[in-house]
Amino acid sequence: MAKKTIDQVDVASKRVLTRVDFNVPIDDEGKITDDRRIRQALPTIKSVIERRGKLILMSHLGRPEGKGFEPEHSLKPVAARLAELLPGVKVMFPGNDCVGPEAASAISAMNDREIVVLENLRFHKQEKTGDGLFAAKLANYGDIYCNDAFGTAHRNDASMLAVPLAMKGKPRVAGLLLQKELKYLSEAINNAKPPFVAVLGGAKVSDKLGAIRNLMSKVDTILVGGAMAYTFLKALGQEVGSSLVEARMVNEANAILAAAAASRTDLVLPQDHVCGKQISQYTPVEVHEGNIPYGWMGLDIGPKTSSQFGTILAGAKTVIWNGPMGVFETQPFDVGTKQVAQAIARATKKGAMSVVGGGETAAAVEAFGMAEQFSHVSTGGGASLEMLEGKAFDSIAVLDDA
Image 1 (tube, one colour):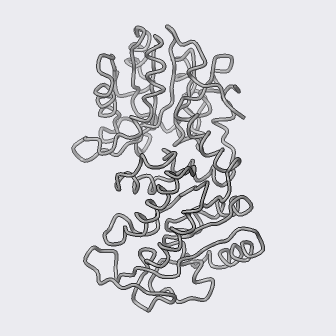
Image 2: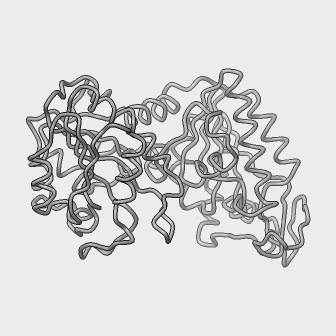
Image 3: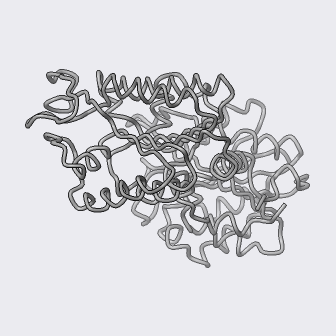
């Protein structure tokens, strides 16, 4: 069901407590290496600021222990970057505790069109446990709750669920990025134009099992790449050399292959492989069709597979892609992923709807400079995958219906 969004509520002179996903990579020198998640939250941020709201932003960053302040996981660099992206807007970062007296004091003294960025929520272990008392302290900050953190939507953390529950009776709305994510992912699955093609990659069958089972009855074709393909090929009796195989998932892979054979969905596996002795730019490289010899590991889909996948994608009207086709971070094993990205981009240019999901896949298309060539690149890794599995999210259900 569609949710009420931030642009549909009056925010003038009101405190808008907004959960964002500012879990961005920061190097050892404290520099943000990819600010995409900050930039993608700007439409919601500007919607509040331009309408004279007072904006309080809360997020986690990294995986702190939950025992208090850890400088390497501080959101201070994020607040500084946000200030750079919003010239003329006052962005405050009060203290090193999101529920400490400095944060509370700064929020109570806010003027319209000002922003407070709270310190990392996960410095408190109660964030991960969904603690109600911790949530109540955060809830006291806001007159309106806004969820714009799709990347965390599959988790029932305190800021995602207990806070909006504590704010019952006040507006609880979706941010513009969350709305966009839900629109593309739900539409792509539930209102897809055929031919509907899902491209699934990555390392493990176990990670994609729910998505494969859910998509089986909905898509015309599933293209399988990445290391997960070798578990399927092993199930078919092929030799896969030293390729990564989930031994405990071979029987499950067999069951999926049988289900696909009995359904209307074609499940297409790689027919050739770019192989190396190890994951290294300097390893010997050979292309093997069919069986992979002992001592070699499949690290990318081969040229015949890339061509076959490209032909199938050329006719698609809806494409969902989650998971790279190989070890794209290491050349020359990035070629298959790049060629699949190019094929999907060409289909998009011809009018197909394309949704790229998953952290690694989003990182790949960003690295290739192709992020703008798809209908939508999701900010959520686990969340987008769970949506492909057909799961419902409590953190979204609790928001006000449109």
